[in-house]
Length: 541
Image (cartoon, rainbow, N blue to C red; front, side, top):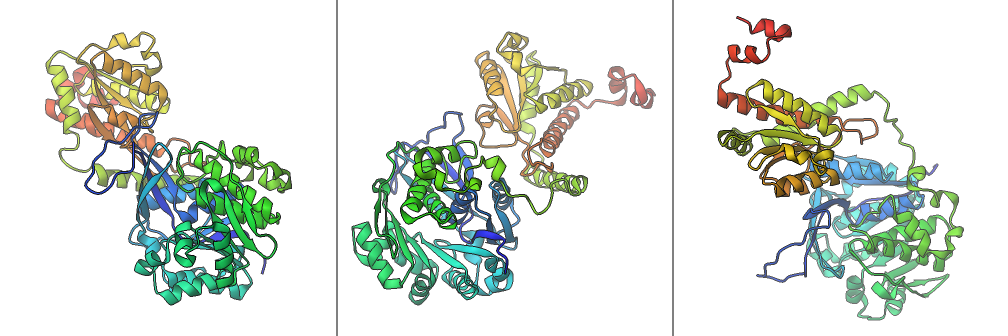
């Protein structure tokens, strides 16, 4: 059959929450986390052994797909958005109990501790693979899977379907045998999986348990003899990697670097290795390319590529890049495969449905009689003391700010718009000590807004932050915070702020209702402020 994909994979698809810590602590210890340079405590990224290596392979020009089980929850939507960003085709069922996540703690040397919840991945069965994904496997040149979170009977089903269809298989043995037998299946299943795979990439912990060898090259040879693999490749940290195959056996040195975060380096290596196989490079060059991907991964935060920097960095590290075909040398924006469905197919219908869904989820998160109390209390206290209310924002949220200032003023809370970009150039003089400033931002990270808020706080203003991220700089630097987040904008390019702006208006309109209710504004009073137009006529008597 015609091969639609160079590579498809199944396994861990995980939302990585990455924290910086002075050191990795042990049981019964306590330590304070460090902020990133931009102020946030945690970074939320797409990750997981499978999704990681597929994203690096896609970066190098492969037609890539992912299959398996997820949930229709916030984590799942975040992951699927990331897959789309990396050009990864999706063949997923959304019938899992929940989507996977991990908390990752990284020390200054790049060392890490990872706590994972496998969730929907761990619910995958062999019958499910045969029923839902057999044809998808057959449509690929290579299928990759893992021993990490996926049950061993599902791993075996994937490898058997591929072998029967003549599809090459690659298995990442990410955890030791003892851990696999504790949670994923039986010893017989573990052995069968390793015998079925054409290419094996076992972790050093798995290698040590399987062979007792400390030398990576000797261990690779021992494992290949044991399981009859075409090739066994073992990553060896700063020493590079070792391989045993019919065509080439030996070591390939790593690139010296200062690691920022080693999370996912082995997955990036695996993605580079599979790309080299598809591009039909000789083994020494395949492993140089794989090492380059691992190095590029260590120089960024998280386990998936930086679409603006990582491809260029790989080509700096990997001298034989001329051996790669043109599609592996393109910029990330140029090489993204076309979506089978245009983003402009029925865009209005998609937006309307998405906006309603996102506002419904937001409502569920913020619903509660006391959600707006703290923010309203700040404003009431400021007004009682003779203070005023100001509203500011950057970009599209600044227009929301102008609307909110007008709305609040019309229902009994005089408010003044403040230009955030002018704030550090003198406009902060508009705000007196004790005044309240409502600061609106989608990300909560915008540098111009951060500068404005820092200036205002230094001048003793009280800040009500409104943003789409509860872990943002703005949330951490506000006296009171209102969440106004969405997972999807509903816009054709998935970037343009639409649903997020509606969310901000939704939350702030609710705050205005809370304030209006406290002041018991009657129709006559409202008419005195709004005598014109149809509303003025309606409230005249």
